Image (cartoon, rainbow over all chains, first blue to last red; front, side, top):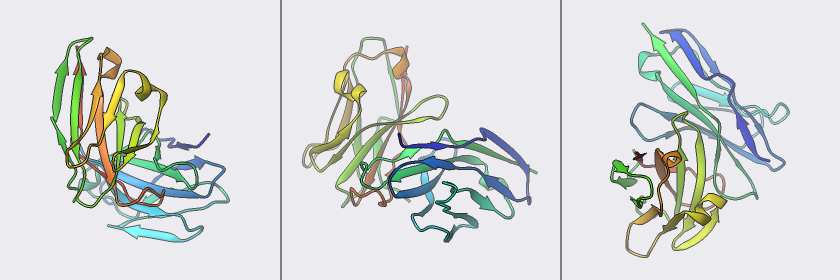
Length: 113
Length: 115
């Protein structure tokens, strides 16, 4: 079935360092991929989305490229800030397979001074 | 910023009791989703609507869970007989379009605790 895998449960980094959060997916349909960020006690908010193969998409310093050949949509940032500490979810919406999104288990990013 | 409103923010019920939560989607968003986020932060899709019509729902919601989105009233999700395993954050999201590429805007959630 359609699914999303996020391999890291917790990533702890020092402020200013680069980060990559992994996301791979499985679907037989053409995929739409999303990254959401959820700060403590807040609603998840969309960070990035893409359905275009090999095209980098960017927002608020974060970027990701959908690679259909490897079924991946990793989230990256060149220099993390304390305010980036949050839960990050990768989500998949397979075309022609219903409208709801399949979420990964999330990665908690903890940025320390 | 999302303008999806969910009430109440916190709900505490005993086992076997009914638990009802409400959601007002963003203005102009005809599609509404309900998700359950457990203590491990895992999301589970429950049900979605376009206007008043159910689009999809999982088996769980066909049994103890009921949901509706009446015209000119908040959408609601009700658990008929709460169980301890229902303790979770219930997130409502709305969208302009039912297609998969459409962004979903989430509310802050209703945190249900079943004692």
